[in-house]
Image 1 (cartoon, rainbow, N blue to C red):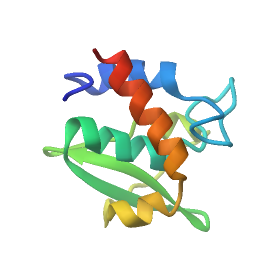
Image 2 (tube, rainbow, N blue to C red):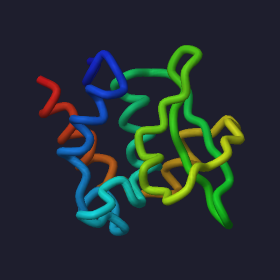
Image 3 (spheres, helix red, strand yellow):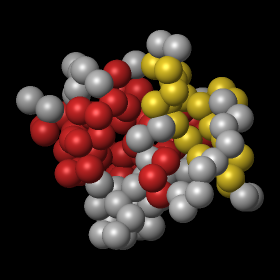
Image 4 (cartoon, rainbow, N blue to C red):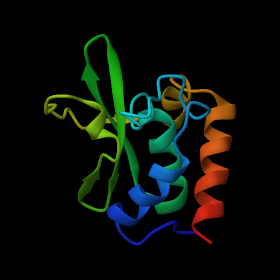
Length: 115
């Protein structure tokens, strides 16, 4: 099932679904904050593609590659532009950065909103 045919359509759905329940770092003034891991997993579920990562400080920022395009639907959480490493990431390492409950809540919300 595809939640949207474009990154903008999928972003609009995600924007309605992100909350403190999908990431404890969420804030109303920065709804993408802390949502990268859970979002990249759900984007892969609904749109396919690969998981990628970039080193940010002492941690990782996760996002997607679909076809030949980078889809970083949570980049707006950063105040300044980031440099992309585009390193491959596994679902296991992305899940290590989020909780299964966060993932299930976001996935269910996106699937419900995309019907």
